[in-house]
Image (cartoon, rainbow, N blue to C red; front, side, top):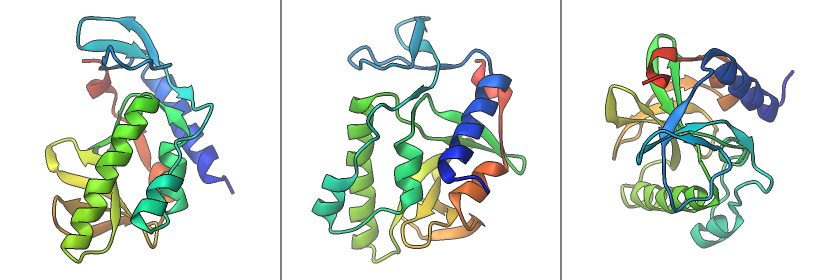
Length: 182
């Protein structure tokens, strides 16, 4: 049985094989190891790069007095990459990725806001990992307690569980080629 890291690596390999040229938003201030040829002021080709030092969640865990599920740490602490346009059971999803250390810090700040909102609404804590391609208000999230991957509307609880684990969910995802070559 594959580890979660091996499952993430396998998805990244499938993605590179099926989408040979990938584009993402270009942020000039970031020194991102994924950046290749700059297409214009807003667009750059990208190639995934393993993080030399995985994104650290320990300070945020201390500040929020919580522990993040290992799958959340593995997903965001493995690769620098552009967001992945995927298909899950025929439904388009954008799986969020971080492009650089600076982007990782931005992600941690966004996770903080999301967790504080969940607490204020007295809802189970989740961490968003993606968006529905057809609706930015539809979040793909991981339940921080169970590790289940599910869907939730912004400000609402998970309303549908897609898989019991990130590994199980990632195994069913396929690159969505047409959205990656725009």
